[in-house]
Image (cartoon, rainbow, N blue to C red):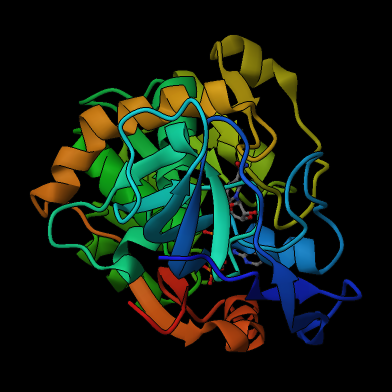
Length: 334
Ligand SMILES: NC(=O)c1ccc[n+]([C@@H]2O[C@H](COP(=O)([O-])OP(=O)(O)OC[C@H]3O[C@@H](n4cnc5c(N)ncnc54)[C@H](OP(=O)(O)O)[C@@H]3O)[C@@H](O)[C@H]2O)c1
């Protein structure tokens, strides 16, 4: 099918409130060697998009300024040096930007097939959270079967993926969330212990539940005063991975327990990493996680969908933090 000259997309006009997200018409993205052009059917909304819209998370060099870090749809064109991909194939992809649009360029190596029985909405809910959680929890922090794991923000897109992945790979899963309803949702996803951080002290609950030992791995997106509390909650040889700091980037940390317990403090951001690094994550996901999705042993938690031109409403919902799981934008041809 011939490609149109232009496409609908959502631009960030003046970074700031949700009104900054404005429908626009742009030329289709050009694709380079190793890339494919995806005709987007659905695009995931992630908290980093909100932070980008607010002007605090600029796209890395070379990335589209259109927001959107994950898409699902059909391959519309294949660039040079791409093997094994064909026009018409359904894929979901991790992208560095450009997802809120009818067409999006993606590195072929970062495209994954739809799991069995998936539509575009469910497929678009996978890349950003599954790449992030797999890389940080399993590749960086080395979570192993039989270990214990704490993820804060259990009902976030990241949290819902982390609970399911950690549980599927044999960990005892602890999580925190901001209401009893959210805690119930976390338990439904497989969390062994969900702690309402507004009514309970997670440090105390984890100490009680682990006989004072603590957990082996913590995935943290809160930062700030959670850092010293997380350190208290880690077991000897524990690993702490920071992926965000919703409560602030600075922390007052006592390094004595870090030394005495031989802790590892690490962290990462996914978006600026080179394709080769992300490709290694994609390979691992395809081999070890996609079969579990194919078998229905885990699934993305979809909370709401919005048409592309209501991206502002999608961001408002995300900023309200009332959602449980993923928010997805749809284009009119799923
Ligand atoms: N480093 C990376 O590579 C990477 C990649 C992707 C995402 N991230 C980060 O991971 C985090 C989760 O992303 P997401 O898209 O899954 O987010 P999301 O679905 O919007 O969830 C964020 C949740 O965090 C909880 N929360 C805890 N403290 C908060 C605070 N101070 N302000 C706002 N919310 C707070 C809220 O639930 P409660 O009601 O339970 O408080 C909220 O629903 C974001 O910070 C994002 O930037 C990092």
